[in-house]
Length: 225
Image (tube, rainbow, N blue to C red):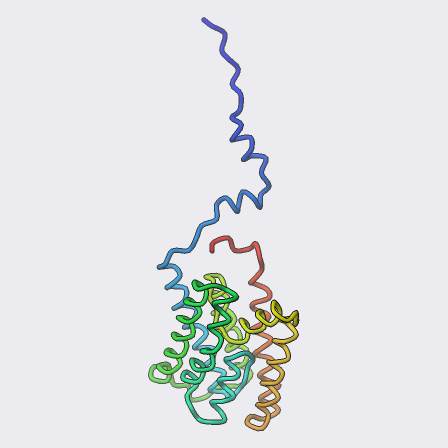
């Protein structure tokens, strides 16, 4: 019998074995399907719409275009859904330039769904008694989780987020500071329409929302795109 030839490990196998864990995870990266994106948009917006409904029922305020829509709703009496959809219209041009058509179309769909769900929710949900502190915490939490779902599927609720990124790229203005300034202006403008106590409680809801995003939305922890 001939002497057996020593087996040598395959070069390709050796290369894979020597790859860092981060690279191996990237090799397994999978894109979301269209069905997964649609399901995520619907689920995320349902959560956000419920959070927004709790904040609105307690006559609270928040930041961003959601907060601006609340502010105009309290001032004019026009429904939140109609105002939120209209406010976002000017920002789609910036979204296309900054994020591309795919992101913009998903964001437009998310905004349209939130506007629609917000109009329909009073037909299926009536809250007779709601503690403002509970509304702030749960409203912020639900909105944060809903936004987290949207972010992981490359969508958003548009508005100021897109604008501040554009201003940072075009003029060098720091996005975080601009966003903070805009949110502060919304809070200050709301004082004549809601009580100081409601503003303070609203800050708790905003903190809950941002804390939810800060803890859970970190690069490298979610591989599918």
